[in-house]
Each structure stands twice: as C-alpha cells, then as structure tokens.
Length: 557
Image (cartoon, rainbow, N blue to C red; front, top):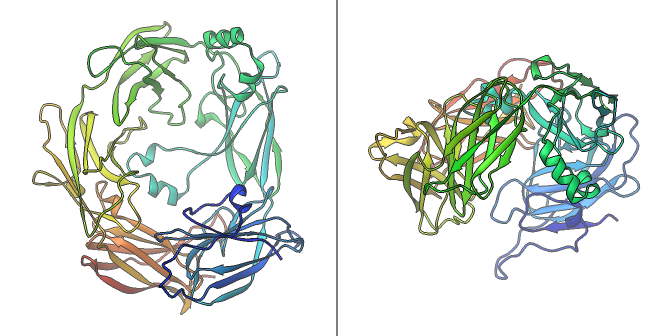
C-alpha cells in the first residue's frame, strides 16, 4: 500500500514533506470529528496508458484556518490511496518528473482543474490522471568567436494569456511576456530547460556573471576581473537579436525536444555612474540601482548596489532611452527614487538619485469582528499609470495597526493589502472625505495628504452556487465576482474561484456592494476561445449569504 501523509500548516507539499511520518490535524478533544474521507485512483501516461510509479499526488485544502494537505506516492501499478482525509474542498493535483503536472479534471495541460469537494465519510474511487510528456528546449550559447559561454542565464518566455492579463491590473498592456523556466549554461555552453507545456516560447540569454558555476570555479582575482569587465555581451533573444519583437518563437508539442543554438555578440555599450543620496542627506549605502526600458518590459538585467559612499557604476548599457531607479530598505522603511535616462555614444556620469524626496503618507489599520494577525500583512500602493517601472510601494503594519509610506512619488495609486488571513477583507479605505477604493490615492508633493484610514473586517459576505451547461453541472469552470462598476482602484475586491466536480462554487470574504458574476470555461485547445457566461448581477449586504445559478446559455459542441 502506498504511503499516506496528512500535513499541517501548508497548502503546498514537497519531497521533503512527503517523507515525513503521518500526522493527524489538531483538534479539540471535546469536538466530535466528522467521518474521514478516502480518495484513490491511478496515474498513467497519456500516450500509451502505462502506469507511472512514484508520482506525487496531493490534496491541498482550498481555504480554511489549518490549510491541511494530504499526499501520497503511487505504487508500481501507478495506483494511490489517500485515506483519513478531512471533509472539505481541495485542490487535487499530481506530478512526476518528465511530465506536465496535472490538476483534477483540467481541460488542458498547465490549466487549473476542478476543486474536489469531499463530504463526511465520502469515498472517491477510480480517479484517473493521464499525464502528458513535458517538452524540452536545449541548446548551446557561444560568443562571436564560437567559444562556449559558461554561466549564461537562459530564460524561456511566453506571452501571457487573457486570464493572466486580468490579474496584472494597472500596466497590463506593457507586459509582453512572462517567465516560464530558466537554466544556466555549463562549461560547454550547453543549457537544458525542461518541464514545458506545449506552446510557443521565446528564448533569452544574458551574461549574468554571478552563476553558481562561476562562483565555484573562479578565484578571488578572477572574480574581481569579471566584476571590472561587467557584462560586455548584450542580452540576446533567439536566434540572435537584441529585442523581443525581432525574436522568433519556438513551437513545442507534447514530449518534443527542440534545440536552439545561438551566439551572443558584443555591442557598443556605455557606462552609467552616479550617486544615491539617502533620505537624511548622506550617502545611501547598499541601495539597489536598476535601469528599466519603458518600451521593453523584459529588459531587467542591469542592476547594481551602491557602495559605502553611495556611488554606483552600471556597465554594459546599450544606447537608448530608459528609466533609472534606486530603492533602499532600512528595516521596515522603504525608500525609492527615479528619473529618465538617455544613453548615447558617451558614458553617462554624475547621475543623482535622491531618496526620501517624495510624500510621506501615514496610515492606521483598524479591525472589525475580531483580531487579525498582522505579522505578514503589507499595505501596497500600485501606480495606475501604464508604466513598466515597477511603480509599487509598500509599508509594513505594526502591531498597533500604524503604517507609513516614506517616499511616494506624485501620481495616482490603487491600494491593496497583501497577506491578510483568508477570512478577512478590506471593508473601507479613506483619506479624509475621499473613498480610496473609488477614487484612488492622488499624491501631490505640494499638497501633502492626511492620514489614510483602512478598515478590515471578518464579517464578509458569501456567494455560492452551481454552474450548469444544458442542465449538467460544469466542473473546473472559473467563477469571478467583479465589483460593479469595476475600476483600477477597487480591483482588489474582485474574487475568483473554481467549481468542484459537482459544478458548485463558494466565494467568501466579499465586501458589501454590487457585483457582476461571470463563469468562464477554458477550452480544450489554446486555439479555441474560452466560453464565457452572461454576467449575473448580485447585490450583497455585509455578512450576507446568497445563492445563485450560472448557466452557459450558448450551445457548445
């Protein structure tokens, strides 16, 4: 029989956790525990149905105070049995080396699957996972002389899908590609990127100069030489071009291994140097300085730290127009500064970046309906102006609820709270008479704002229901509740979940207000558009529990 391991206090599992001894979720001795559940099935290959031994199968609780995880390995016949599972709603997935991880009832590789809902004492048997072979890209990176290049970071990129763009929020239009996987060339200049889902990819190579391979093989003098040389080779895209729009995509099928060799070349680059000034007027030590390209958001290779005098030198900057930014972290304080940078045929010197010249915004967080843990909660201000310049500022919350932003540049911002316990939500955010969740936070240095008042509550509304298509429940449908109207400032109130095997969904911790609820069913192929339901209008009161039905009205083949 395979090994079964319930694990506490984590919604992810690893090989390390799979090797632990079984443990039962903690409970109050006086409480009567509901009857446990059992989930069993088999994992096989999609091509020929052969059993897969040692596949990792896991049930991760979708939400809850304990976030239980139950996991097991498959045996020699590819079979698994996970016993003594607590009733609840779980993300159910399986993974195996060389194959694409798959979720329960997923429509296509790499896409979310259905939630598995378990009632007390329920036994779910004969679950069958058919795993698809992952694709691989290999290749060799050489310099202009054909010599192998060691320690080059090779990143595989892909274009984001529509659902991912929705999650990006402000500045989504500037996001051209997202990272999928990464590798580093060895002493032969060879790289191998594996575990890829079928699709189209771009390949980017950059001479990082700080790979583990180089750190082990170079002595102290050679390390200093490398630092002095900087990165004389420009970052390149396959098949050897400088910009993403010139790159050629590589199309991969399931299990396919493609080879992509190309060379990196020297380009005429310049040195950019200057000084970072701390908020107190002295040198800013160990501030991070980076160069960002507004027209090329994936351009993120050039960064360095300032020295004890606050001075910095960036080498290998190609000619062009950029944004240069500096940021510094001082315990719980976060400072930043930025300006435009134009690089031509000569080195750029005496760049001055002064931290602490933006507005100071003080705030206070209040809790309703109990006491929330604030140890890992951050208040974020995200610029609503389209810019790839990482226009994000954050502040930690103290135990008394106080927080402050020390260096906020002029502009318009949306507020967000990260790290709240899943039973809590942002009830309101006000700056004087202004509703920040409606109008945003408008920052002007000449008009310092007052105190930002943020209120969180544990008394959220709940919305649940069933998604159907031609009177049949739809599993693995994505259900999203959007504020009505939705703006750049209230997107944080949008909630998303996935239906279970019965087409049932639950959205919790919703703020009171109006919503448009839409269900989306990913297509079986990336070439076919997703099917979306007509929006359902819902008005929720504080703490209210409503039930609705969502129907896919358009007949589908």
